[in-house]
Amino acid sequence: MANYALFRCHLLVFLLLSIVVLTRQDVPLGSSLTASDDGASWTSPSGEFALGFRRLDNSDLFIVAIWFDKIPEKTIVWSANGDHPVQKGSKIELTSNGELVLYNLQGQEIWKPKAVSGRATSASMLDTGNFVLLSTDSSHIWGSFDEPTDTILPTQVLDKPSELSSRRTVSDYSNGKFQLRLQSDGNLELYLVAVPSDYPYGSYWSTDTIGSGSQLIFNESGYLYLLKTNGYIINLTPKEVTSTTKGFYHRVTLDFDGVLRQSIYPKTQPSKGTQSWAVVWYEPSNMCLAVINSLGSGTCGYNSYCRLGVEKRPICECPPGYTYLDPNNTYGGCKPEFKAQSCEMGGLKEASGYEMKEVIDIDWPLNDYEKYSPVDEELCKEICLEDCFCYVSVFGFGDTCWKKRVPLSNGKMDPSVQRKTYIKVAKANSSFNNSTSPSCVLG
Image (cartoon, rainbow, N blue to C red; front, side):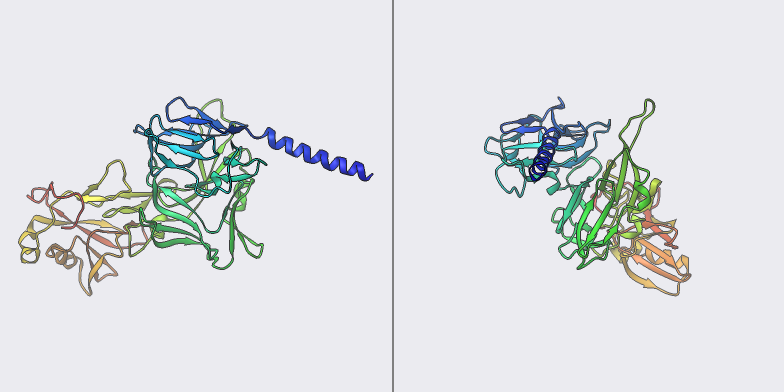
């Protein structure tokens, strides 16, 4: 009986090892991919994930990426060189000495994994979406899960300290101004950060688990949760979500707008019509109101304001008299369409060339430099119009007025603001209109 039990044990081990071999397609040393439009990639056994080069939108530049390969969108879940795209003809290679290296067209090393615990003898794109480097005994010495970018996938675990960084824009894969951090103290937080230094301006969402958070886990069932040191968990994915999402791909992303979202996509494509990623959970609930820091521009760029749009997504808009710095990036801030008011005679000399445009429930709460009370609305407009340093005045509480300086930051439009706001602009027939002054505002 003992020999039979031992035989069964060895058979079980053999079967498990066979399953591992069958669910892996090894990339041998010396293999490489070249940046081009031929679509060459290293794919997972099921074909659900692939690693290769992807061309950036409206560009001749490429990034090394991992993507969902069975859906039309080919959604990217990881990238190696978002901050340093490369030209056509560049190459990623699993070298003969066991290193994974990205070379540009001139043969210069652009990227390689940060912390590899040995020499690779092969690599593999797994069905989990994890691209791994393997040692002689097939153990993982590095994986793309170890260096996440803006996405985590089911089976992925983030140990502390770890972080996700948002993209700069939808199509720009360089690091943006938002981060999700599982800190060394166990707290899981969303941060607004300075680009490119990553200096944290402030947290705008947190699990409040200082001293108790251990790991951020996205399990196979599609639940994202924070494991505490005492074994208890904090569910981030609502329990009712995954009960109705079997047969779907799952991903959690820190999007370029700073919102942490969990999305699903059906694995089976319909015979007619199209599918898209559907958001099933997100935090914070109102991104426009969540971010307010004394440093940085806030959710949107300087001199703009944030309002919630369809599906509660933050939209950044310019106040009257302002236009986007970059029409292709509405999150990048706004510039005035007029010449700044001269400060000769304190601004009185040119005051007649400007007027105050009224908007409702918009405020830039951290840009005050003077406050008046009690005053009426007319005086609130007048004192800004005659002050060359004033770009906006805000009237609220029935008799209080605030003057605002530029650049305007943390702008938000929401019914809870409950203010009348007056934007100083040049009159239509004024010589101060359509200025050719510099694109950044500051008088």
